Length: 407
Image 1 (spheres, rainbow, N blue to C red):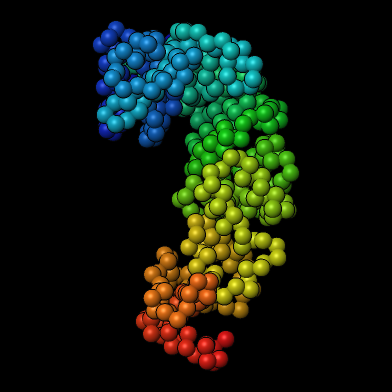
Image 2 (cartoon, rainbow, N blue to C red):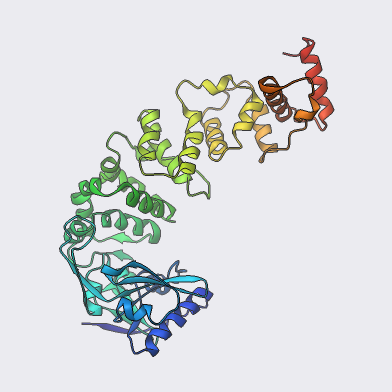
């Protein structure tokens, strides 16, 4: 039975206004069309929604016939995306589901009522609908009460919800990280009991969910739970994670989540190579893999990089991930390098790679590999010469070196 709550959702964002236009097209065609899920939750919390999804009694074919631009993303689930004024909005038919044989997708999907649609969802706070025409919230599962109590509660039995779709275990952690809400006691018990199911989830799905989880403003509330509930051990069976060894990396890059995870494992006692390999196993992109290796290269046990020149280290720091890793290593090992002060000053001055002062045309007497090696040495010297301001100083240094006066 629907619990209707008279409450106007006021959102002046351009995206919401476009979403309202899409909803209006469906409503004028005689279809029931309500906002659904996370956008309703976030609006009631006064948070900016990232996506605006609609649920409707219209079929996929009926929706496609009303809009000139659509993308079919799941016809078997009654889902498609409408492109309206340059933005995409997901529209799904009210449906009921059953028989989740593979721990991910239901084998039985049929058109249903709004209440049946609410009952198939994971958490009560994600199962709310908003009818903008009547300005009413439709709550079939007690989601409003849980929002007000700041509690995450499963729709129905959490053990059943997690058995249906194993990734919901990680989603329950993600929403605590994003919202800062407490877990209902039975949800905690279900997370702990069903944690081993995460081993069956594809690495791509785990990767995407962990990244959202790590972005959460309240991540500090869940990082210990990730360890103590056995979630990370299930996902990375060869790695160790000590909550006290977690090191936050203050970077806005999404890739920093993987740097943190790998470093966390290494500092907790996992081997350096496995700390990289297991995280790369999340199907990271080539760029993410490169940046992870650049970041973790400074923590390589043999510390072979400490034999490189200051200029070489500064040049390496221009790679994505490398500067963050080097700065963190220096913070953890103060005074280890004899030239630490000079290196820190070089990092401060050179946040971006400067143009080389000496180019190939300036060295007409050299060719091939010898030319490349000399240009590299001169560029490293340029990065080290913090008080130099002209290419002549480098050329004089080169001349002295050739004459045996500079090592």
